[in-house]
Length: 219
Picture (cartoon, rainbow, N blue to C red):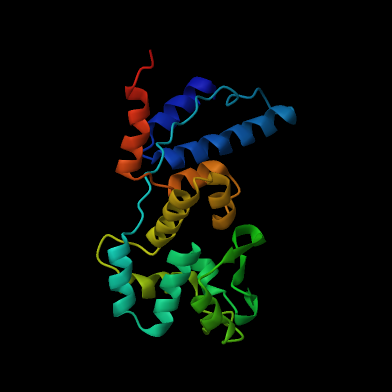
């Protein structure tokens, strides 16, 4: 098998761009190992990159969040607030403990065990601190699963809106208030800045005002 065979095989698969990129990376790793251990040439060394379109931010509208809060029971209200006001992922919401609060800051253990501190509205921080132990107890591992958190929040959101879009809303509003993408990256717990960019939508009016700066020529 040579590079042309690999290119043809990749092109014949009905995969999404992200899947194609992942498979390409696996092929490059495997064929590099073959070459390194004397099993043949590296047929994947020059495989063309798989272009992955940049995802479009989809922040939930504030009116949608307010409506969901009115419909939700107290437990689910807290889940929604943690996502919309703190930018937490479902898995992070599921594992919140009352002891994780210090002042109005929440200690969050994110992906890969990385820990970050996120400021919360004082009323939300006080509510969490008043409940030691798992905030959302469950039968597996003592707390609810991330999937169950998503289901409960999804039940009070309108069709087409997901729990993860509350996190998008958080990122977008934080960036609009600060214009500091690094601060947003830190608060979301992203290892890569490119990931943060996916979460931050720019308001049309802001974009229009920014572009207007290029419409004037100085004499």
